[in-house]
Image 1 (cartoon, helix red, strand yellow):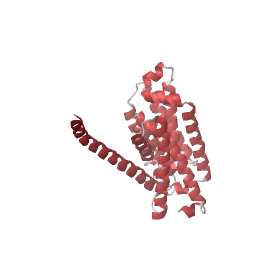
Image 2 (cartoon, rainbow, N blue to C red):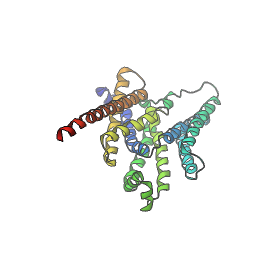
Image 3 (cartoon, rainbow, N blue to C red):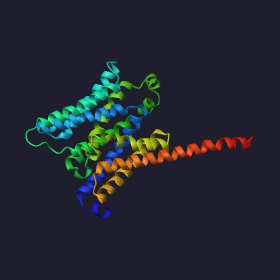
Image 4 (cartoon, rainbow, N blue to C red):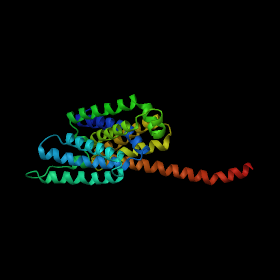
Length: 283
C-alpha cells in the first residue's frame, strides 16, 4: 500500500481525509466523553440520515443535507434540554429514530431505483471527492480554531460547569457551540466511517487516550494521534484484504481500545493483589 499511495490519487485523498477526521475525533471525542454526551451525539449523527435522503430526493448534495439535519437536531436538543422541555437522552433517541425514518421516506419517494446509500451509512473513504475533501478541511479548521481560541473556557467548562459560570464563562453559549461542532464532526466522519459507525471512531481514540493521560491537552493530542493510527491501519487492512474501509477502521479502533483496557484492568488487578503483601512486609 505504501507504494500505491504515491501512485493513486484516491489513496492520497483517503489518507488526508483520515488525518482531518482524526483531528476532529481527537478534540470532539474527549469533550463528548467528559460531558457524557454519547447518546446525544448518536442522535445527532443518525438524524443526519434524513438530510441525506432529502438531498437525494430533491437533487442536491446529500452531505449538505446531512449537515443541515444534524445541525437542526443539535440545536433542537440543546434548546429543549436547557428549557427543561425534555430529557436529552429521550430527545436524542427520538431524533435518532426520526432522522432514520425520514431518510427512508425521502428515498422511497424517489422515482426509479433507489441510490446506493452504503457509503453514507457505512462509509467509504476511498471514494472521497475533491469537493468533499475541501469541505472536510474547512470544517476541521473551524473545529480546531474554536478549541484553540477558547481553550481555557473549554477547560473550565469541562472541569466544573458551575465553577465556570461563577468565573464568567458563558456555559450556555459553549454548550450550543459544542453541539454545532458535533454536527460538523458528523459531516467530517460520514465519508470515512458512515453514519452507523460514527460513534465508534469518535469514542475509541478519546477513550484510549483517557487511559493514557489525565491532562486535557495531552489527551487531545494523544487522541488525535491514535485516531490517525487507527484510520491508517484500518485503511491498510481494507486495501490489502479488499474489505469495507469504514468497518475496517472501526474494528481496529475498538479492538485497540478493548485490548488496552484489558491490559489496564489486569495491571490494576495485579497491583491490588500485591499491595497487601507489600503493606504487611513493610509493617
